[in-house]
Every structure is written in C-alpha cells, then in structure tokens.
Image (cartoon, rainbow, N blue to C red; front, side):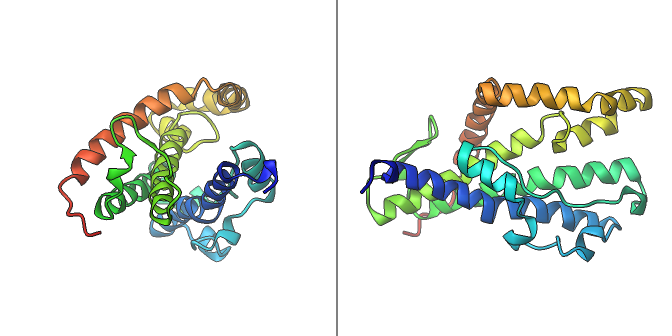
Length: 227
C-alpha cells in the first residue's frame, strides 16, 4: 500500500465523507423542516427539505472539507417575510440545525452503549482507537459520529455570523445593536476564521464537548447492552 494511502488517512477521509453525506444533510434538513413548520416553504419548494446529501452539497465546501478538515454545506434558503414572528421564528430555524446535531450525538452515544462500544472507548477523556477488527471499526465510526456532531453543534452555536448562533444573538440584541452587529458581520467572520485556522477555538469547544459527553455517557449507562 502506498505511504499516502495508509489506514489512518483512509479513516480520516471516511469521517469527512460521513460529514458530507450524513451529518450535514441532517443539519440542513432540520433548518428546512422547522422553517416549513413555521410557515416558510421556500426550502421545501426548492427541494431542500430532504436528507438527500446531493441536495445540500456545496462542491467547494466539500472539497475544502476533504482537503483541509473544515468546510460547509449549501445554506438552506429562508424567507423571513413568511414568518408570523420574524425574528423569533428565525431564531428557532437557526437553532434547529445544532439541535439536530445534538440529538444525533445522543443517538450515537446510545448506540455505542447498546452495542458494547463503551468497552473500547475511553469515556473519561473521550478517546477511541481502533483495534483492527470489524467490530472495532464500527465502534470507532460511532465514536466519530458522536464526536463530530457535538463539535458541529457547539461550533454552530457560536454567536458569530454566518453561524446559527448569530441569529440567536440578534434576537436578544436591541434593534440598533443588531443593525451594528450585522453591519460588521464580515469583520466578525474574519475573526472567527482566524481563530478557526489557528486552533484557538478548539480548546473551549473540546472542553465543552468533554463535559457534555460525560453527562451523556452517565445517562446512557442506564441503557441495556444488547451485543
């Protein structure tokens, strides 16, 4: 096997493909579904209220994710004019994506517990290594599914444009402050991008993830093991 095609690299690409074809579609579907429920059918009419990954695929975002480890999906179109309560409903639509990631992480934790995966996962420090067996790879993929969903959940809740958390912040800001915030959104985005590529954001996000995982693992400990 060529040096550039080792097992670790292939597993890394597999996780990134999982983000593109499973996790991102779930996130975007949640935005579209809640928008539909609140009165805006824009995403539904454009075929975006689906978990079909091709409907949410942004080619450049996918290339960046595969090459550099961070990327993006095609944003779901939303028309706030169709909402009864514009700002409040926009906040609910924004929260829907990260909430879907959190619920997916809970499902992954439950699957790990019920299949006996906690035996190979260090739940104290949230780390998993494969043992080379097919079952070991299954546990590792479930671990990665939980890990990525939690990180995306917390990352998207950061109150920085264009992330979902910025819509939550705007709802609570006074009108003048909200206008100022949106006017300088490019500046905030530049700061976020710098913190992202320098790894500064990884420290608080990892701490928050670890604390959340410990709570979810404790709750999952009451589930029966079926394998």
